[in-house]
Length: 384
View: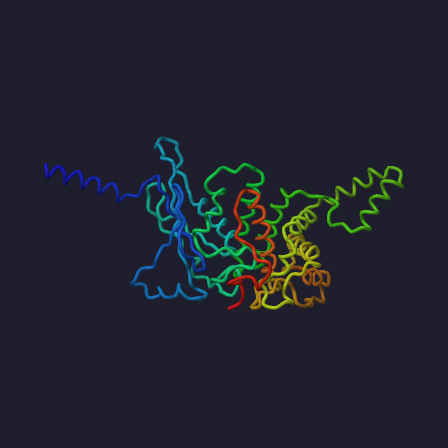
């Protein structure tokens, strides 16, 4: 009997050391130091620690451009019945989605490295992106909290995202727009240093997607003179109602929808805070409409004319959110004007994240508590 028991124990042990095909494990990382963990039914986020033999272990505890936190995303899936023609599922997009949600919540860059274990097999993650320096003074890197909705850098904060992680969304169109926009936002943070121009375009695309589901009043944000002109056209011209309708249709253009979405997302307190080190680098309330329009114009000039602008909007040491002077482009004065009014990448990222969080709130997400100004924050996002 003892020999039989040993055989049974050996068989059970052999089974447990095999990867379980209903348990998926993916690897994420961030150039930020997190604490805690998050666990829900069939879902867990926890730290992956470097080995003690690793001489670079101390690097993760300091704000260095190469410091990283590694996080394992583990979750259970339904069992797969093997059969001819059955496609083995790839759960790596789940890692992309969770990383995007975390990027929006914390306002920090998250990288995805693929699977460690998936569908009953071991995998080798891709760590190539971890060799890219990430300057900790940039708001979406490092350990400092964000100026807007400063979520504590604790993985347990993911409880706020429970409606997007654990339940089916009630508003499918709103959720789909948020899902797509958050993926573009996360991609923007990953490319912000290596290719700020592409990152800027990703942020505009994220905003465009959100603008599709934000209610749009065609007459909102129009000055009194323009509204009066519409009224006169309708009342004083023959067929004026059709002419006014034609012009109102023009107001439905993507640019106007985009600007409307940005303006609806920010409140007065937004302008009392800033990621910029100095006041002259901060976004001002009186300029936000022109600023959003100029950001969209940069995207249009790039797409339709190939006009490059990356060197003008890339993150700077002072984290300026807008231009502090007018660029000198003697051969393209209109482009110089657009750049003068457009936000930097840091400013556009801040506007986009706030818009994403406001959309997430409509989907049931509990947003982090907001401060009224920079001085109210315990640990504001500032240069090191």
